[in-house]
Length: 472
Image (cartoon, rainbow, N blue to C red; front, side):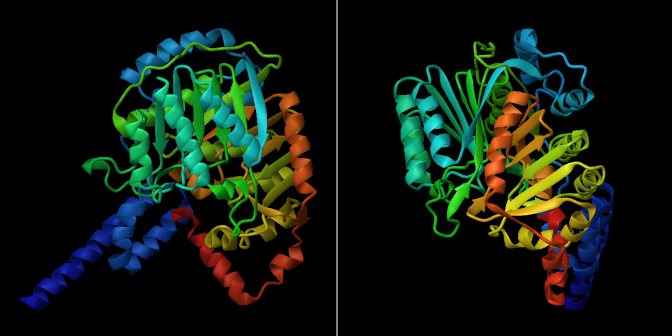
């Protein structure tokens, strides 16, 4: 009887492995990911089966987007608020911008002021000042919040805002902020701050959605001011962690109608996490000396398309003279790799800035497997030397730039909720150009020899790491 049960169990596991492999074949969002899962499920089902059911889901189910759904409470509010934004919609005959609008399902607006915030002190001084001047509400979400000196400063600013009657909503990712601790959250709640984890695996139906993360970093004050970019909350982002050393990052402050795009993304995330539809100010505000055009592009695994990857490819294809890209994690999918190589081949000055110091070893090793093809095609790869590079910025010609949370890797393209500000403004692009020129002055250029002359064992390890990229 024992042998019969053992044999039946083994047969059942292998049958489930075959069924799961078929599911991976039909639903994986990349061929590379499908191959990795199929081989694992057919060869090692005892290990691969639980891994696939917890980490292999290709889509995030249950998330209601006002932009993508019909006949929902969110949708009805969205229709009303979009009418308020209509006077600030900037009509464009530029097909490249229209493609970005289609991906974002949000309009290009004019009447905005976009201000670069370079490195931690400038970013958090601006952010804390905004919280201190809030009159109605503060919406704040980060992927990582630490209970350290910077995290304590943030908590105190939020507590003071709540104590003077401002509504404060604090949203965090439960994995990124797993070390935050109940005491921190209870202190906020006790002072009237509404606190919630994003809760990717909320409820029994969505219990296997563990591999999806909310990587957005968004703050909105009263629907009038907004912040987005690369910074999380922790002393390492101020360069105070010896392991990372100096921290190079970029954030963005927005004022004007585009802030409502950031607000909408937070509003949808809060609704997923709590089932609440919070009442906010949806009247656009504009009265600035500058007139930057902005499209806010939310992206995530609940989208019908791979929005983040398509956005990056669209930006690359639109470049005619110059494309400068910075990303701490550079393991782009095949479409982005091909677009970068083709841009270089047609004479575009394609530069990619990545860290010299690795933060995630698997991602660092993966890059060595495809960098030779990049370099041979004319893509220039630079490694930033002074410390850890964490900014996510793209510059296109003299015409446009992006600042956001998207890394050039599979996790950002397909597994994370992300958000990007696309700004087709020459004035803003010139500011980004000046910023990046200073960064390139602190880089070394990668040569083909240093990549190809690695020992064979390292080439094998790099290739294996790259094959794991779709399931990271």
